[in-house]
Length: 388
Image 1 (cartoon, rainbow, N blue to C red):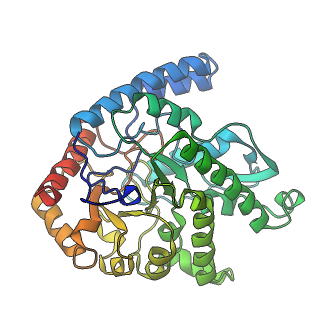
Image 2 (image 1 turned 60 degrees about the horizontal axis):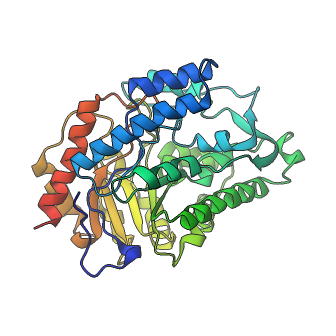
């Protein structure tokens, strides 16, 4: 494995050029074992054995491909933010919720079905939250033992989920306001960050989707205005909450990344819109080292908002689609990197797929071989652009 880092960079500024977001397509045996475990036919220990073997295979695939940062593929999760419900008591199904179709693209109906199956937007807090286990401890401990190189641990941002869990008449029995609930979730995630740092994890990534999945989407912004919400206040609050979540990583030498995307489920998406309306505040005020940004289609807008990224921070350009099996051309990717370099110095850029390959366990509409070729392309581009 080749680690591509800027000469003279300190630990906080490690430059992993060939990046990935985190999730990988689950092998059939993992999906089958999860279903069998859900039916009560195998124990959690037996499920873990299947996951362990699959993660070791995935790590070896990543080593062969040559990515700079490793992941367990999120194989232990049913979807990217499953750690909340798996680790915290008090999050319950809302019996009054009505599922609303929200996924777009050719696979929209398929994505809606997956979202309905996992209760994507049909949960609430119905008791005082109580953490029953670490959110990612079972992932980090295994990666520490088996990863061939530096690895990342991904965590869902607080506002990705918690802002929808507050139900007046139910939740207010335990939390007087939505802000009280959100701060409780912040403290849980902050504790997880501290635990990861104590374990020696060197890269933590926060998947914080509200910035573009809601605050940059035209229709969502209009709905917020009509409901009386202050858009600038919502942005300020989201930035503050993410900074609070990550505050204990400051000065530790841990690389901190923040990923933004527009939804990723069975090759469908939920929103569209450029970074323009959130860029100045988000890029300048978020206390992170790396922004991992979706940039594979016109839905993400242009590179102009990157002018607000402060000197010394890295932008990981998600130019390669994890939704579409078609392999991008080397020439077009290099041209787009050159375009982005008009706003961020080339030494502060990197490349990745635009999102994970399986933000929900069924995964996007690619094969394992197509996924590998996408990751190989990430590495090949990184070599051509930054190793010369």
